[in-house]
Image (cartoon, rainbow, N blue to C red; front, side, top):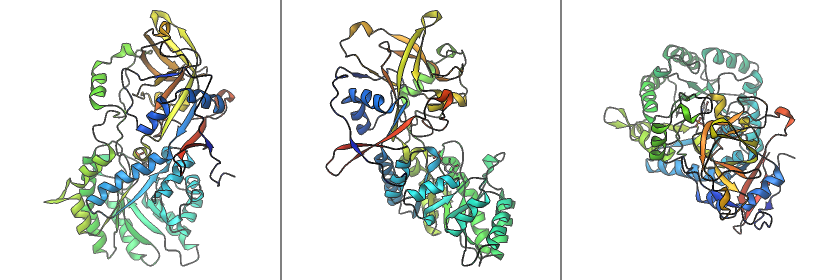
Length: 475
Ligand SMILES: *Cc1c(COP(=O)(O)O)cnc(C)c1O
């Protein structure tokens, strides 16, 4: 049954077949690794071969404990500023149920944007009232369940509010749905998400007339991009709307700033140097992608949040001071930043083939659907760790090689990277490529059974009471 915690097995430690295995960090775009993850990869790399044998390739290895650590880092900042807060895990970031369970165990809520995410959160033990539902296209079935369970609903449009009003009218009292209104900041004028001022005001007037039937709880926004400044600006734009709500005798309690907190994948200086030096010749298709996620962020999510809370909001008043003076709860919906360091993806090399110009292509068991950046015409600018079956001393393979990585399908665009990666030693069939920090939208967003390859497996690494690592299936 999927609603039980899967049975855990001890992680294999001694492996005879792969006792010479060795891990080789890339020279460029070296992943920042949490010590627990580093230990798992470097301390006994042979074990990765056993796991890939057992579960297949690609294999996603998840550390649910990381999510709890990331929650703690957010809480520390929020507590330092004495800001009342509510954190919701943006569950769309990863399909892992172990991560949803970790969020529930950490005592935070879950941001769900489909009825399926909602059901998974409930299975993980979340209460309906700890859920926040976002997204512009909620179905009437989803609405009905959210209203019945008193989940927080972020209303994306005047049309959605009309639907909620009609649907609530058919429900038996004492249902009093809890609503946020999603604001569309000025900087995102062309966005299809949220409402401009006029629509917000008209929704507020409607809700003021229906205050016995709906609980208006506050405002929500979620911005693309990763700058804390843009959130502080959106917050300033909300000030008059908070006042407008109060003048209608409504009582906003929550300002929900959505997600988008940054993650540091590689060192900032390495990242900048890489961006400066790269050119179209470094790409198999001769095309330099136009944009990348800012993998070399200097700020982690906690530092970012600290920066936001200390930004000016009103004259002489920081965001934190304004929230506190107005008795407002700051809600956050981090997705990517809560799963920072929470997974790696392991691909087994099938073959390496020489191409014209001395380049190579590495074919792996797995596809770009399990490492999806190239489908967004971009690149995951974190290089994989090569784990060789052969030992360090196997000198004849210490041959520098330039190669891009291709998936096992017959689509020309099925490449895990268009970029030619520099390997200090030539990967061989059977070696593993380990991509670090893939839990945030990388590993399973597009995964499928193309060519009838089975779905990639996911396993969770947990630590039991005696400190021993355990593995359990997480799919
Ligand atoms: C996707 C999403 C999030 C999570 O964003 P991250 O960038 O992963 O932190 C939060 N809120 C809403 C409304 C979203 O659509």
